[in-house]
Amino acid sequence: MVSDRFERMNEQVAARRLAGVVDELAGLASQLGGDGDRIDVIAVLERLKAAAAAAQLSVVADFAVSQEAANRALGVEARAARRGV
Image (cartoon, rainbow, N blue to C red; front, top):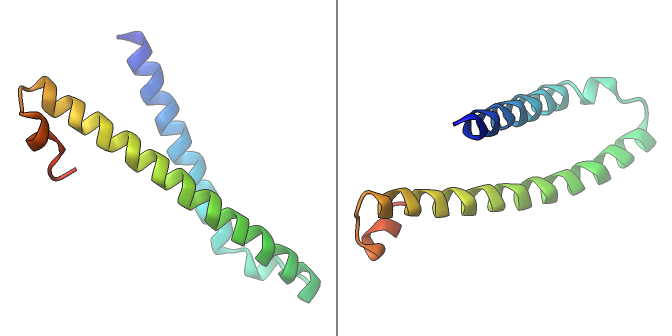
């Protein structure tokens, strides 16, 4: 289905963008000037950690729902469909 293909493309783009952010963070320390810059970056990184944790929770919850639905579609009993997810 076309919409499934576009959804998968969007997921791939999101994963690539996040990988790019990780790569940028790896070299961040060498780009900072003084302690003022470091304090500002520490504050932003704390916000980033919170946002990443919230995003991860949301993605994991969506994954669990998706996996349970896939199991149920295969005829797995509801209680068993939730196991291992």
